[in-house]
Image (cartoon, rainbow over all chains, first blue to last red; front, side):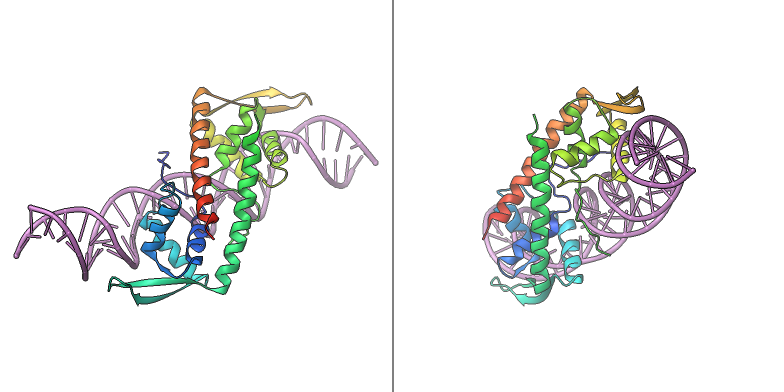
Length: 110
Length: 110
DNA sequence: GGCCATACCTAGCCATCCTACCTATTGCCT
DNA sequence: AGGCAATAGGTAGGATGGCTAGGTATGGCC
């Protein structure tokens, strides 16, 4: 069945996460909330996409994680960008611009 | 292995094809060429992505195909948008704008 | 003849995403 | 005290979709 697609993001999740973590170390749940908020609710990251993506990024050494106590007194896994992650973010941004511009040109056509 | 990603597009192929065929009935090979050209070579559609995508769109009744002789005297399978396809195109465009705007907001953040 | 561009196709791999679950804690409301 | 929502983390399994790499065939040009 063709699925809803009303929510989501395809292939751009890494970009969104890396860009969001760039703003400062943050735990997973907060990353998803921030993406939703900053995108003015246009983007919604389901948890079933979020956590696997974080693990992938960590495995690729683009993020590193540390368990920390948040200000609410709770434990959370806080992610921060590695140097490699920062480079990857730049690449992802460039790729996105290229894709986005390319599609823009196609859609501009009357 | 993390793959190259330098070429391509994800989930947006249907949109690109539908939009391109909207300009007028066209055969598969020409669709790929036109996408490449109109996008100013930012986008490249490999044949191994193109033809399966066309078949999917045809199966979903978003495109209909007919074998025809081209001006070069060769047989080619010419695709045209169905009414359903036109509606799907509008939806895809709206989805793209939403995604694109959402990511735009995230990337704007300093 | 040989080669390139055109034109179509498929198998099989791989990555990613999502739905649907599960666990646990904190704080609020009744 | 009980219940519930929000917070915070996670996994399994299926589905989709793109790509590489292969294949077929024709027309035009050198």
